[in-house]
Length: 287
Image 1 (cartoon, rainbow, N blue to C red):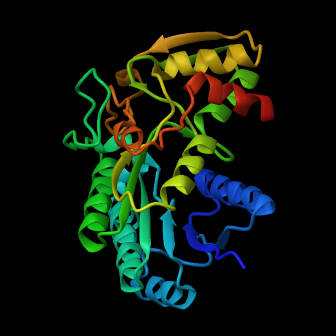
Image 2: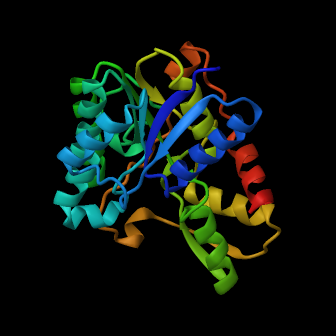
């Protein structure tokens, strides 16, 4: 009998959690290789230390993939406690529980740990300097995982879209309701498909290449350019007006340039991300 890798996934109802479960089901149909314990807030609250220890000790996964997060960037500014409890202490709880049973931990992080003041793609060794409460809480989560469990993978990603609430679906919804759309044109990043990210994560957890990684699709664009590409691929003819970030007057500061380079993934031969335009086209063809 082939031994299956037992994986506990948090945030299984989120975009990335859903895609990880979908890909695992698909892989298992070809050759059974994963055993999954899928959890979300209703079955395990990652901020509850005792509950996390109890469930992890009982299930004894070999890997924990933490996709759970408090991602409402602007809401984090006024609700610091929730942001840090989920994004920092929750990550620590999982890392400690994993350490106690000798398991690996993969923590999903974000481009928002950077300040975005440069103009060249960011590598894993570049210093973090988050501008927002959300970014600070995720940066602390990274630190706590690194200092509590040596068998860690930190995977920073950006501009993620998949099965759930995301920028792509928002643009399509607004295009159906409005004659013109106003979209920010002074933030640069890389739209990333959960399909590519989930594939990367499932490859990575089967190795011992521990450390910090960047995992995004290839290339870069602004939100405005992203929106125009979405509409063009769908054959929707609507006027898109470029605006500045300051015009939105949002509570949280965003990095102006947060393109991530998959430097360490390429070093270990696991950078299989597509160009963002290609991944987006596939997504729109299926949705």
